[in-house]
Amino acid sequence: MILKTMIKMDSKNLLYEGKAKSVFQGENPDEVIIDFRDDMTAGDGARKESMGQKGYINSVICAKIFETLEAEGVKTQLIELCEPCVMKAKKLDMIPIEVIVRNIATGSIIRKFPFEDKAPFNPPLIQMDFKDDEFHDPMLNDAIAIALKIASKEDLDTLRELALKVNDVMSRMFKDIGIILVDFKIEFGKDKDGNIILGDEISPDSCRLWDAETLDMLDKELFRQGKDDEVIDAYEEVFNRLLTEEDKKKWGI
Ligand code: CDP
Image (cartoon, rainbow, N blue to C red; front, side):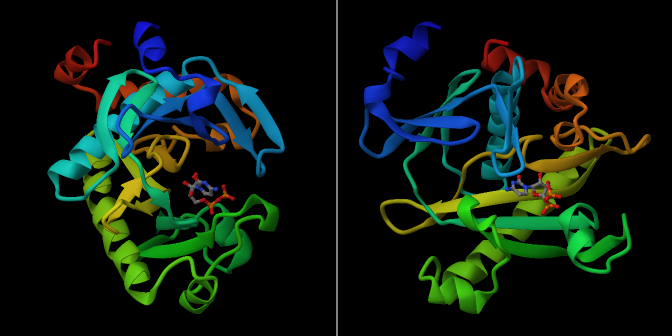
């Protein structure tokens, strides 16, 4: 890829390597370049596979969602999708909190608490987990987050407010294309002026998405359940329903 070479996505500019993305210093000190890789992991990284085209698909889905959120007044770290897989973004000081929003009870919440499987949460349930593989992402409350000095009370209130707004916008967006947004995880960071900005990614890696008619899974849960051969088809289904012809032209797809 020509652009990848131009922006020098080489190890000397690597700032951070996550489980599915690599973050490089951008040309401007306040910017980073995020490379969406095909790697997929489960169980705190215990299982890792390369899934063809996943980086491409997720980067485009993420750009589409972030652009829609921006248009609805939610600040995101997206500057531009330079090309599929390569996103130019604002450099953020990430807050190590996974903000999880749930519209329907499934996954870890029904393993930990006596909620009925598939019961709707109304209002949506917001959960915050400490992002730390070593401690297996334990659930936080405000007092613990404040004592850990990872967020202030005001920050936590802002995270909840933004998470609900993101849920509103995304739930509508997916409903329009026949998909139920069951739950998702988002992460935030602070820019150089201390503003809280939506960072990381939103993609089928970080959401539970069910087809509204069949309730078929269209997300990473397939990988967690070992249905590796169904993963990319499901991600492609989300991609195809979400992107307009205009989007595809804009991103040269
Ligand atoms: O069931 P599981 O342990 O995967 O996690 P969960 O707490 O039920 O996950 C809730 C939502 O957050 C799902 O959409 C997950 O995909 C997402 N999640 C994530 O993206 N990354 C994590 N480390 C944990 C959850």
